[in-house]
Length: 231
Image (tube, rainbow, N blue to C red; front, side, top):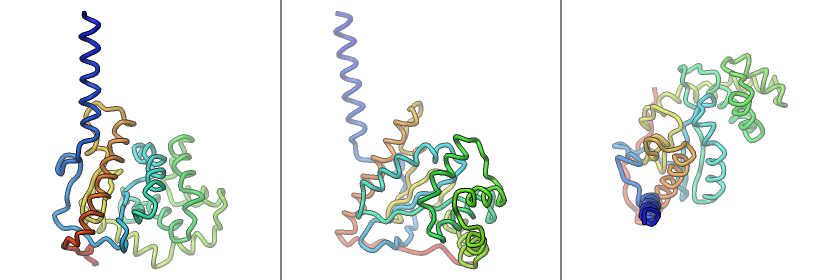
């Protein structure tokens, strides 16, 4: 009899857990709606922005799942990342990311930087260390420095702080969907959950928000759209 009671309790708990995971995400709990949505420059696709940092362990843990999620979404979304300048507008890792992005070299080295920091324990927290690392991994030094010091990259570095403020981002990883909804593992997850469960919950919320934006855009809903102020 005791075994039967335990079995029934286990089945009830499993059912409630599955029901919760399938539930519609709630505004203010699983995600936040921006009071001032930003213009999403993605045409008919849904813009998805991941705010991340190379040295963030949660960003590192989420990265492979995020890559798979982006592939799964395919043409539904226009995806890009913003490296949060955690140490200010001269943040070395943010600067390196923007330089590699401008060069079109991220595909070959993005994962290697995560691996170096979190597996090999190479901190890569100075411009010099990052330059040495990317050159050892096949990036042309002269070209890298040319882009690193370019007006375009320098301007994007300065604007990163403004972009974070516009989207009300204060932690990584954070994901903005359609310029109006913000979610993160800290929001989508629940206290006491394993990180893998929290990550899956985040991806489910992102799925729901992409569908929500598609539906809203399909209905031609008006969104008050503004760009981050330029200074």
